[in-house]
Image (cartoon, rainbow, N blue to C red):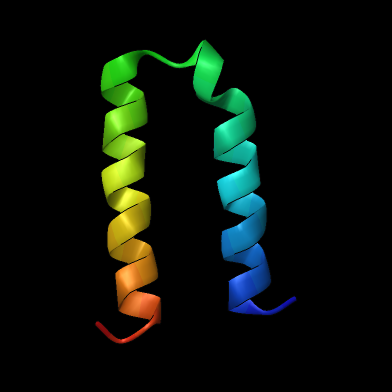
Length: 43
């Protein structure tokens, strides 16, 4: 499984769980994910 596939699966999982998470946790996860994607794409 490639890193990009893992990122996509994680993203889908987070989106699926988003409604159940506290807003603060969702925001934290969004920032973490954005940072992770930026690192993967060399930005």
